[in-house]
Length: 275
Image (cartoon, rainbow, N blue to C red; front, top):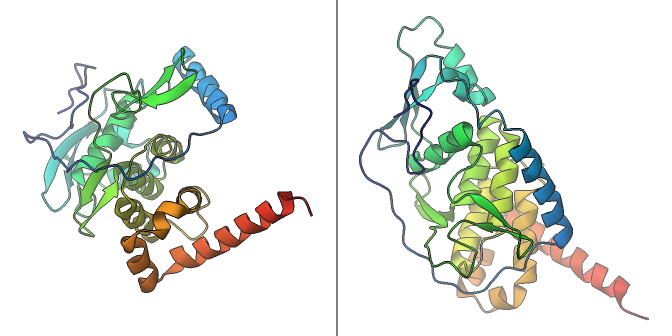
């Protein structure tokens, strides 16, 4: 519960209800390849700038009206300041539609409470758990308690999506809801975090890829391309996957795009090889 008299916020769920949602830990089947050093350097520069001048999300206005939000099939209740919610064009529009209401309440039955909690945490703090950390010694990005091999914390990378009844990578769901809410900065953050995940089962990657295709526009060039590249890089693992065979038999745009991407990859490899 957020209070205008205090700026302290917990890193756990922002729900009024007591309890945490949990998901089963996924067993590793392969490890994704690391991002390029140039990408890390660019990200490091961006984070240093953010630390030098706090973002709007990190220093929100806490004097505006409190809005109650009812999220998901469970109808979990959240509360947030209207000015903070207005950083999302979608949520801000919903607030303005209740301009004459003395007590504002927004119902979002199709959204996941656990994911919405991450969105609120981002709006108030500029990041969501697990947060990004830059390891100066290794000169690389990592997720707190997650991608650093010297730590033994457990970071749940998946979430059960009630709407589709499958387990999906949490950062993928956050990316998609950020698309819905009109929050491109959150989309970039979610995509960067997902790139740091490793040891994810093939079946989870495929269900997450299908979810991404179902909840992003056809012109999306970020998340969809991420999954296509991931599958191609790990094609030897997916070739032995029974889940991959079943998914391909069901078909869909995902696998046509995968075919095109794979052909382009082979053309690029042929062009590099000596004649």
